[in-house]
Length: 389
Image 1: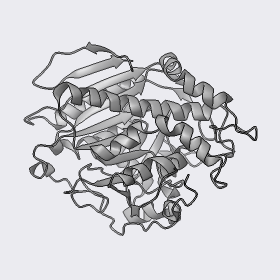
Image 2: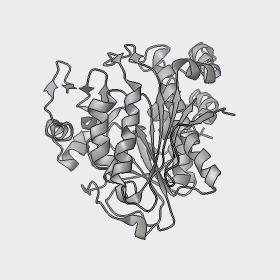
Image 3: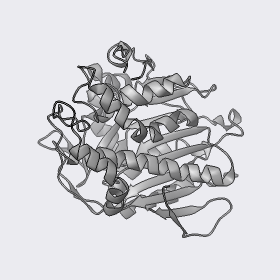
């Protein structure tokens, strides 16, 4: 299902090498309006009829000189117990033949406070994120060029310092009607200011991991061909081969961007993969568009009050910019990932939220059975319809 739309009119790092260079594998830790917006963004998508998830294909014969990167971002909630087993099965092993490099940004925090509806908070073990390196290297054992695995981190204090100007703007700037200009006050489930603080935290993590990848490109004078941006707090329920299109075919032309179909509000902003020169807009184009987007929403009745709503922001600003650069954006009909939360809780209904339950129907996915297979244990339903694993 293709997307078409038109748009509204010195970072400092300290690099510490903590392991030797083994062949070419380096392990790093870096501390550190247009009112006629097309209806296709909202209701004229046609879901791709294919139900093929992926195929394990050696596409290096097609992209001989090209390289790929898989970038993880965000807060590593329940990473070892829930997320990592799914990443091993449905990301690392599926893409092992491509020998992608991996870049990871994480927040070095050990506790998450309670948030908006369904966000109970709890303990986090951020150092679990480093367990991913062993599985990446093992999956590519024997490859001519071992993959690079690099990490970058922020504490809460570092984040607050680096994004203080943006956070203050969201808290204090109001429009001519006296309403918050940036905070999406029209969304009743959003808590002020914490919900949008978390959105900015996610955007910062996305941009930080991209910058880490970009530094490596500049250092060695090359560019990746394919890039994926993936959250580190979700359970990947279906295989993701980042060289395949949404219909399961190889993206020979390297011009299709893939996003999930489920949770389209009006689009899903939780994952993207495709050509590097398209994904760069998704990864780095948000902060620079905040002001123009907020002011544009003042003149569009259906957007007024939604300014920093993350999915609408991506639909209004990011995807149209990708399309304007000549790329295609397609929603994957079977791709499914479920949010993980502290205490080993999985939000089991996430993939049921696509229009008409399409992802579950297309994939034939039975959530409990697939989770049990990935985790090696059964999960139980909670009173709020989540799964305790």
